[in-house]
Image 1 (cartoon, helix red, strand yellow):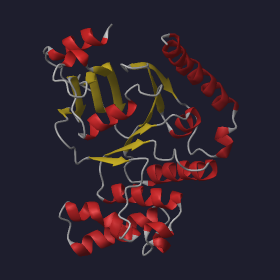
Image 2 (cartoon, one colour; image 1 turned 90 degrees about the vertical axis):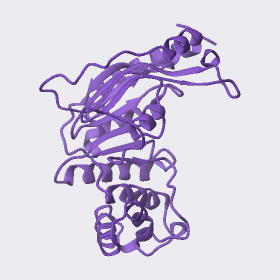
Image 3 (tube, one colour; image 1 turned 90 degrees about the horizontal axis):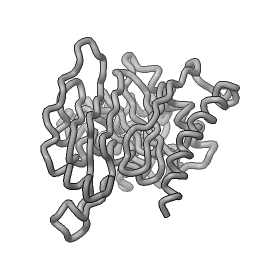
Image 4 (tube, one colour; image 1 turned 135 degrees about the vertical axis):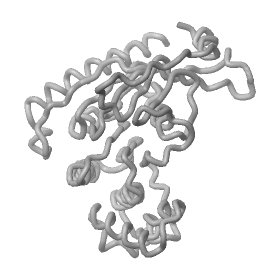
Length: 290
């Protein structure tokens, strides 16, 4: 389907979205989601680039799901739509059965860049989101201290970002999101810029934090790393090349809690082979077009 045909279809009414089926436990539902980016300087969608088309995905409450796909397939775009940071052109995204419209305060976002204020201590950086939400001073201090302890940084509370390693700065970014207690956490390649050893350590820390909570958060994790997705996830959704949609879903049935032995297991290698095969199909399709 050409980009122009997609664009023309996106301009039409997508029609009513069917209500949630009785008895389902989906925390997040994406139904026929479409996203196009207009050509710069043009008001017509006919010159637009389609990034998502017919994107369907359901995520259970408390599930850890990773998105894998070729570069430019719309992984981060869908994450931003879910968080309310971007709009979409067709279909619907629902959280707890309600359409996402605008910034969703119940979704916490952790990006690859730490986005810390360099003049604020780790403690004060964690407090920023709470202050914006009007949390009283004493309460936000207590909550920030608690989450810094959760991520293992209570001793670094009074350090400035430049006094912290990359891994520590990313943990501050995670703590800042945890502090305001969203039900859903979305991660956009948060460990991609870190060295391999730090990356594996933080993967383990993220699982420890997720598994230690009274109620598990629902997590959507965007990554380019097959191994990272397998180690972390309950399920992996592999996307097609752009315009992206979900091509294959993999259940990851490795026992939890997971550790280095999990990475070295025969089952891990078997899953990696299956996921890589599906992902390579899309990469080869894209290369054949050039």
